[in-house]
Image 1 (tube, rainbow, N blue to C red):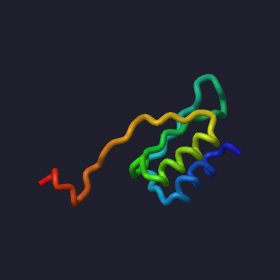
Image 2 (cartoon, rainbow, N blue to C red):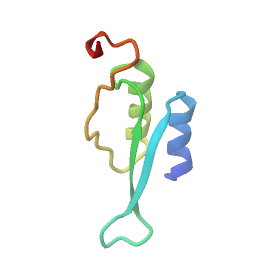
Image 3 (spheres, one colour):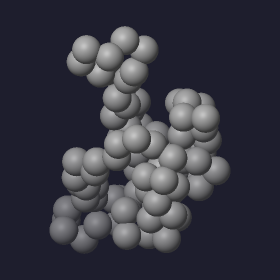
Image 4 (cartoon, helix red, strand yellow):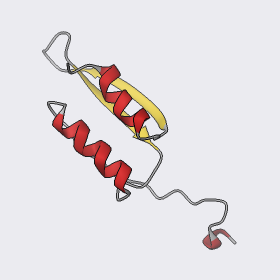
Amino acid sequence: TRCLISMTQNICDAQINIVKLESRQSPGKPWEYFFNADWEGNIVEYRHKKTLQSLKKNTLFLRILGAIKISGKNDKSLE
């Protein structure tokens, strides 16, 4: 089944925090949607790679728009 709950379950099982989730209807295709998800983490970490592979295998379309480095409290570059 290609439903939203199974996709978000993969992310949840990997203990990845979804920051934002948006849906957009596919142009000219009633009842078909695109989903944009922002989540915390580093896409080179194993659990993120594994989750992305699972999403790619179980969706019709997957595109990674980018990754943003977020400085943490212990980031020396902020001092």
